[in-house]
Amino acid sequence: MTETDRRSTPRAAIELSVEYKRLNTFFADYTRNISKGGMFIGTDRPLAVGTEFVFALSIRTLPEPLRLRGQVKRIVMPSEATEGSPPGMGIEFQYESDAERAATESIVEQLMMNELGETLASKLLGRRLGEGSR
Image (tube, rainbow, N blue to C red):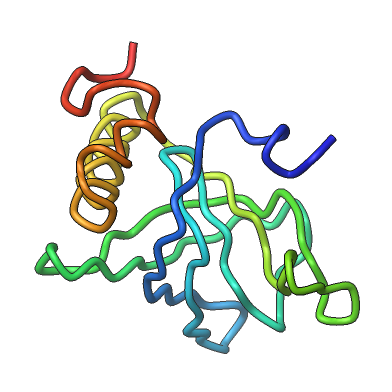
């Protein structure tokens, strides 16, 4: 099974700054791709699979960073990295409510449209933007 086959939602190659804290250390890394369900953070210091944490995602169209909860679902250690699979960690977004999920998905859709254009974003999402997740 390929990485693409395991994903429940298509991802777009968009690089954003992401900040998070582990114990008393702050990290600033970058996303490599993002979808409505999660993202991949490129880092040489991935957290352990199963780790839940809060992170801030800087999106230039928002006045404040987007604060999200996520859980590490897979990691690629630097020693295992390849050109097609860089070091880092695959994160699945975690939500406290359907309203929080809908708001985040809307922001990600808008981000994809702004960065990739409506045509490509619509193809990745498998529908016209603005139709909502049904």
